[in-house]
Image (cartoon, rainbow, N blue to C red; front, side, top):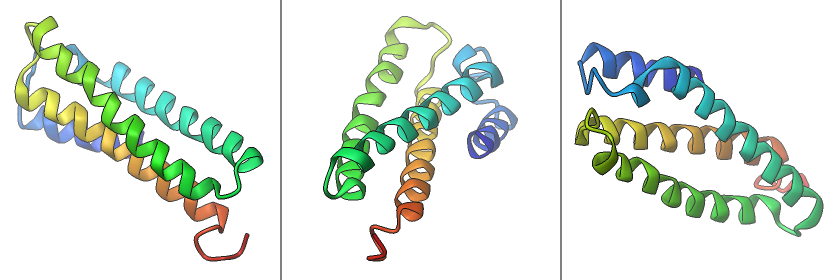
Length: 116
């Protein structure tokens, strides 16, 4: 949430899509938290049911990240305030949440360091 709040502050300072409600604090913070909680839940399940949870999680996270761009791109046709730079910022925020979630969850698991 903190990293995406920084991205949002920069986007607002640069006046990227100032009327685009998706680039305001309530949806950004809520959806960042929801994405992180979802990632934790998925990793928790994988950790209990999959032989190599970090590897599996990383692959699923990449697929989910790509799919998560679809609604953002759809906003270009659905929201008059959406601009290409604004949608790119939203997509960047998805990457931020994914990178932090994968980095933290896989890093804490110890699987990559052979401590599992």
